[in-house]
Length: 241
Image 1 (spheres, rainbow, N blue to C red):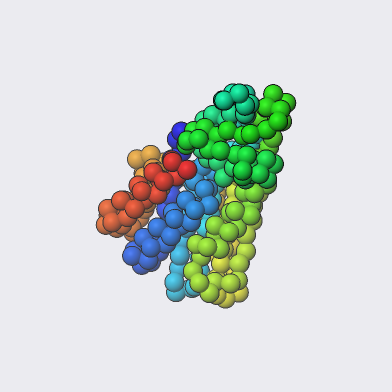
Image 2 (cartoon, helix red, strand yellow):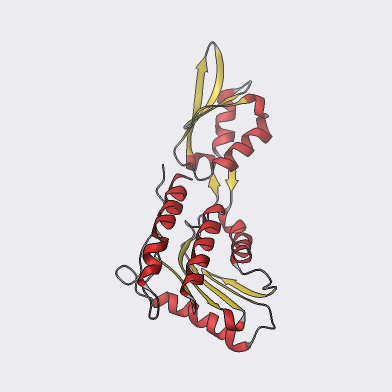
């Protein structure tokens, strides 16, 4: 099982501490649902209720190259009861949904048998020939899907009614600003400033790892304690996905 690298920095700030905790947990849940934690390195969100303003700044890790079946499993022939199969021994579970969908589409569900969590047997007339075809198949291209996933991530995290939105995605930087009203230039400038601050922010002792809220000026210690259990659960779920 591949272990997810913990987030370097994850902070949600608001003038209302209880509101910051709520949005922190919502963002963590959406990140888990979309399996984005392995792509995101640092994230900071500011919620300003008085201005109906939501700003999300993200620094990404290095984007993964296209994923082939051979990148996540050992593919070889197997024989049972005089019949040949293609056997896939799973080494990375992260892209199991994509792998399963590819096998179903190519060989039909009736010919794909997941013997256990780590083994899939594919029934085919010529297992030897199919081994090379299967292991070289690209089943996921993270760089192509990342942009749309980040937009969905931000939209699902933003408060309801914040329909005026702006975003940029360049290199490893993602910025999302949303409001109920027309976006002001200083709000966009603040978002750009947040992105720049993420590049130099101290991590470790000053920013709790694994998705915990960092201690920031004006934050409350209770926010760390109150949300810790749920955030740890989210990270455990991501590690197993």
